[in-house]
Image 1 (cartoon, rainbow, N blue to C red):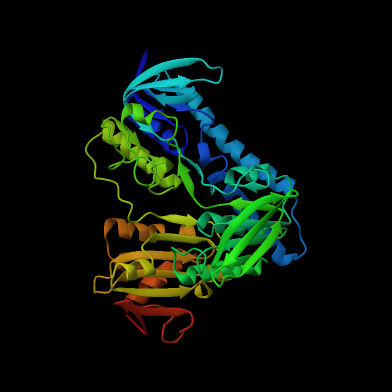
Image 2 (image 1 turned 90 degrees about the vertical axis):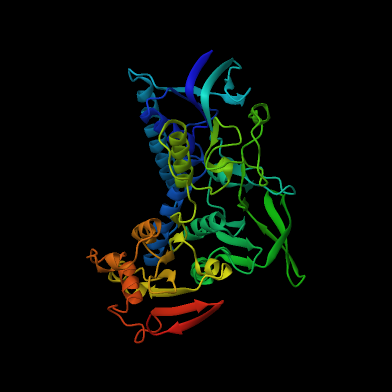
Length: 490
């Protein structure tokens, strides 16, 4: 029986990152993946959906100049497939070349892994050949899959999850999206942006993106509606089924009113479920948590030699988080003692229109936790780069503590190039630094990140545009005990 220092179960972003980090320590590593290296990070998920999003934005820009422009589905599909192929090939070739290295640290098996005990793994290959391997450590990175309500049958052709988008052969004339969180809003943005699909979005709450501040949700909703999308606010889905090759669904609103509607396609986007079944967790004694995912303490399960990373923990289902967890787990196995991971200030991007970037807390979180804070908001219309791009929808918002230290609690940017604007502030939060150094740096011009600098200058009462002059474009307010009071300066 072959023995390894580390067996990684799952070859998605988390598993791959963990294996690569173990090589840095000179350890003998085996990756076991039952389908395709790259997982949802490439297929049916991050890369494919973000490539679709990029193309949707380009088409939306073309349609601003040529209102009747209609993209060809095959052309868009080809671009997505090329992006997936490029990334898949890159990772596969990298894996193959590593396996040919003289030190032979990395090994790969395609098959289904099953824990026999806390050190032993059985691998079943496609031809039903079974072999058994063992390791000192095991990293579980089995990922997740889309959640589907028990009363809905997703055939992945007409009623689909994100896994079924690839099965489309044309732009649907109409579509309903169940779920108004980030992913649901992303797909609603994508398909409405192409201009060929009438999109309905079912929003059980009173507004989309309920975990974010209302001003952010309003910008995204207004853009969706400008692209002929309809948001069903306060609507509960009573039923959804396929009738004569189309989707028939019934909604019930808070006032008791009901609606029956018919569309070509339905997309279910209500979260994901950890892949914990049929991998032998019970044989190794690995426990689950209350969410049905694998319990962990700083990536270590209740079994000391078994670690976990990525979506299977459902802590935060983001590629960057999963990769970081896996690398951290491997350092805990083979490296020096390190500080525990923190999930407090994760930088994230919401691929909407306009783009949304976030780090740290938002306003409603601060209010819920009773944290007194100051807020500055700067409209995109004051930013030279945004003006040059003719993309002035959006704003910068920075939240700081209500004291002289003005420690940054969080930041939100809504608008073009938003994702490029948050990392410097994320670093300040991470290192618990003040704002003055960043405010006084020479920022490139014209650039979106100048908006960050101007927000910081507003906090220091030395902004170029004055809030008491441009009251509609620059806003300052102080929030205490759940009450926010506008001020002309801070």
